[in-house]
Image (cartoon, rainbow, N blue to C red):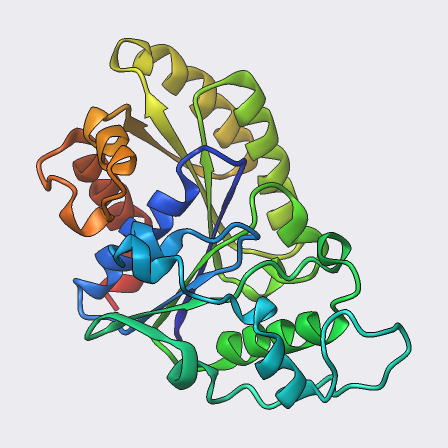
Length: 270
């Protein structure tokens, strides 16, 4: 069975960095990985190391009006009530728009699929959802989805297609409270494996944060992993560098890879 991972969390927690590092982690272990950016402000391309000038030219699938009209028979923004295809052809989208990051890692920038935020974009939403449904049924070895920040992904029926979720949080009361709500939403949708990744943890506060988080996670039967605050992450993001050139010996990269090794051990050892 393929691996379908949803990376969720509050904005600013490091969700996209986590998605990028996980995509590389799985691809470096020989899996064929498809990374999908479904954020309304997509920046997974840059996180994966795509040059900034090239990344900024990528048109998200939900904003590609010409392609949407060709596949659905209607342009985004046209009047409500117009007829369009709810089941457009999507099986060639990866070949047409998939950006090859490395031999076994591709990226498709989908863009937001939240109709409430996009206004009258029903044809675009129909195309994006049909594509995501196709991807979830595909036999590709691993799919990693960098989701919209917050709870939107749970309200539009995307989350129920996943078998694993990583919820990324900062070590603050507000961020953790939101993360535990997202975790409950994921469990209610039937996602069987859920892990909490607490990012940017000050080393001198690790003990206190671990005790609090592990107690809450134990009540929910959820795994918890802790990533130390890492200056190299901050500096790399300031300079617009991708995770492919993060220092391999940095505390953040080491902790992320150790967390992924434990989280996905059940899949990697098959």
